[in-house]
Length: 67
Image 1 (tube, rainbow, N blue to C red):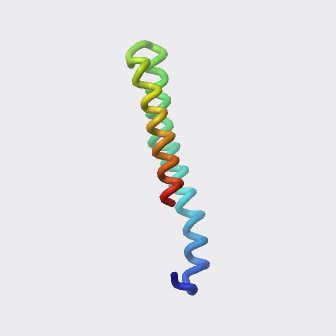
Image 2: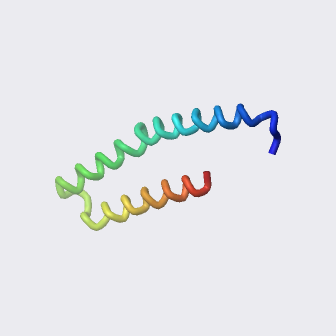
């Protein structure tokens, strides 16, 4: 849209991707690990686990499409 911010935009894109990756490992990975552990130990319903995984995949796909 504005040519003078072209370099800034491309630099911020990499920074935003790094922050998003770090947040994914801080917030989402422990939740999925705990959920997996709960399914293995029998505390969580086995039907709930695939629904969560499908929703996670769809949300990542939607985020990539909107980005």
